[in-house]
View (cartoon, one colour):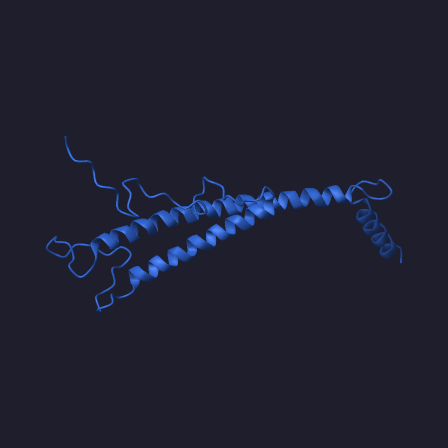
Length: 161
């Protein structure tokens, strides 16, 4: 029979790359807290990590090569005028970095949407807690009645004088 296939090389896999859990908007972070503040902190950490990786890739793509080669660029052509692959850059690395840049930009947009939703959730929870605490006033008056009464009495005093 045919010889057995060689063992896979370390670090290489035929499976498509998997995004890390912190940057993946669909999967919650493992240490994500159920409260809005904890979720917001977790999302902010993920956003910071994505932004740091974005910055590193952009720096690499826009910096000249080690031997003075021109920078790869974010969207410059990878072929020369005659249609041949550019010899002054590592095409595989350029394609890989540009693809990762696009993935990270999409992940960043999704994270920002999640952060916006978490901020709305946090403010709604804070507002609800504030209303709940003010509704338990000592005399049982409606929330905000004291403020309204004092405003009316202040205006009445100023108009009476």
